[in-house]
Length: 492
Image 1 (cartoon, rainbow, N blue to C red):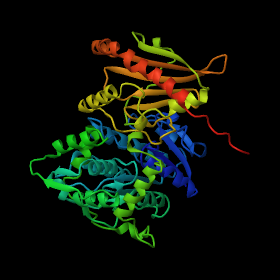
Image 2: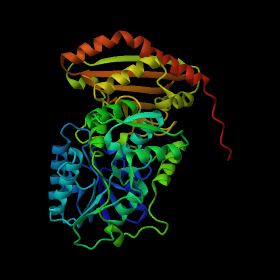
Image 3: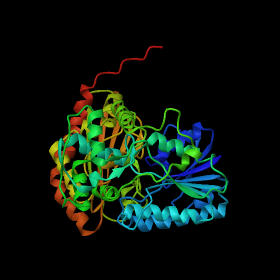
Image 4: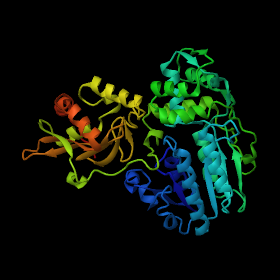
């Protein structure tokens, strides 16, 4: 089949594409920014179409000669995500009908009722749009997905690991039927071919275990080798307060934690398992909760996490690249530039540059970086804690603490775009150059495009600290490169 995957840069989409390819399908990926698919291992095996479902751009061309469309886009985290989701789904449904698409496959959430959260209502509304679109649609309804890098798993992981004693709201006693990401992907791949041509319905999908969230935390602790966790129930702890607590303790920011927590205040248990009539369960059964956690932790330990929730860019989120000439903005552009000669070859300097962030830190004034991150979290931004996917390598489009990798030229350039709350737009560039003697030269540039008076006041307020932060950063990166051991030659 020829499959179009929307959301291919997201958590599920980035894992689905290589599995569709392995199953022998042709794959086309729809993305607003093709650069974000440049460094994925399967980049050379897919077509890339540029478009935006929310703005109804590029959809007709993307769906040309397509058999199956996978809809994996969700505006979770935006203030108006229900409106964005509704408009995006309508745009895609119309384009799919016009293009003669044979099937839409949508990964949604549990069927909502009258008490459901806005998150689940939006998922249900999108499912309804597709089921009434005139294009045969298969909706897969999943609750909590357990896998390395998923937002639900990261929320569970950090709450359990960081809080040996936790004051818990009532919703932790609600029953949930989690499902392993490997089983979700198995159903999604099968959806391209196994269903009757005109089948138009939704299926509940879940793993073999029905647990409360409290059970999940205790069993996670046991699998991870942690001491027993003590949970103290408190009735007045509302979902709103709970989401702020989750945002404080875990890397998941409030704007994403709030709808996730809201979806847990009611039970999410499968009402049927009819999908087994089309996609039979594996001979050894669906993946249990304990095994799913064990597999996820192994991926994290081995730095082999394929995709992460943090690497997805929300629909409508700013993604403008840094202009080659900052005067392009038509107004004032602030910048801070630093250059240092390094008594080491360029390859050693590059190893330090590419390893920046996460547990490796930012090479200057750790307290200042930490405070800035927590202030961003309090302001509703992404805050600290997103870390990095791999300890040594970076990829275009991935999140790096409160930055996003906008461009990387191996051995030469790393450009980061700020995703913290700012009255303007900001970038940080790091380059590994070379002088006439073959020694490395470190070049660092911070660029800020202010928005209104607040942007100018912000830059003027932080500029006095740049000598400590950016100056110390350049100095310490150079020193770290000089202390780097030389790479051992690879024998032939």
